Length: 137
Image (cartoon, rainbow, N blue to C red; front, side):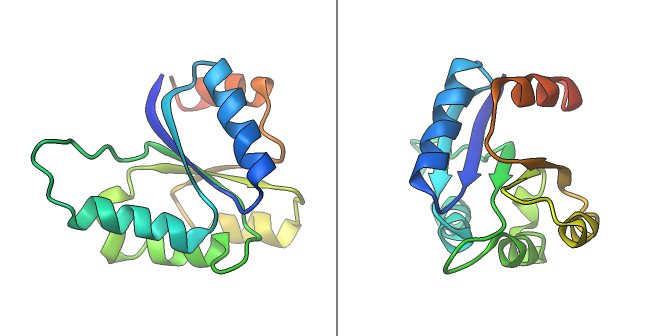
């Protein structure tokens, strides 16, 4: 079981579904969410710059990422997240969850080594079982 997962999606129903399916499957102890890439980067900045000795700040081990979001989409998030500014968090694997599987997006995803899969929404129990085997949980 993973300690923490981050789900980044602008749709509150998708986020709620992710939380329910992940919790039910015992895939992760904690699920945190962000409504766009900018909000997710703010979370990582908080982890990076908050020096709280009483509380250990957990880093997400896996990120479920939507591509099409307002404010900051998935590709822009990945460009920032894979830069040197966030190098300490790049141990997190990324699963792209998209409502469409565009061949151009699939090709573009290969440019980011932290993307371990590109799956179609919505997240499902069988999908999580597949991922448990893929990432050896």
